[in-house]
Length: 210
Image (cartoon, rainbow, N blue to C red; front, top):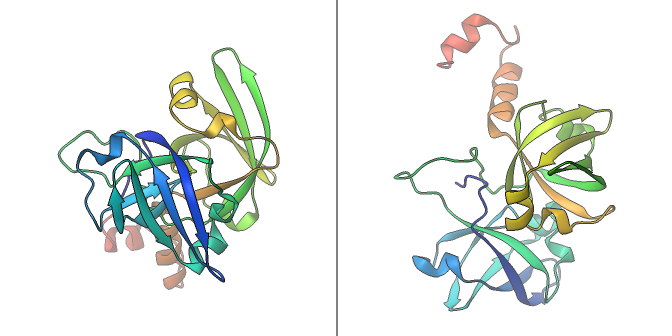
């Protein structure tokens, strides 16, 4: 599990492509503090396993299903990526619960500056937008963000200067694909509601501990 608080921006050193899968080698710095073989690292929000470590690089395999659902297929040597190690339970939980399991991708449609912030609009299909609510949480390329606006076929976030400086989000351009992980709580609530013919009721919420 992750928090969506990016630790550093890494650089893709190499991409070895299979028929449908690939193997990534990524150069980093800060995350090597306690990184061990088999540890999880979120790369642009995608949970990957570090199966080879030779500081300052680590390598991870990406299976075909992950390539299909994310923007990893567009990575190339020199690409900058957001990196976060799995969260620890002995510290502050600054973002929101992020699993590193991408739901799909959206497309950056515009970026507009407003004083010290930048509004980023993301076009997405209805299958993703159903889980995105105003003032709720969403992870974009692994970055924990608050949804500022939801419209027909899109949603927007407002990016503060710190996030702009510490992540790759502002370097994206209109037309770029971006990984989206919706808030996991909404997906579980929907599944529970579908399992009960009566829909969401107070009795249903109490039954499952809400």
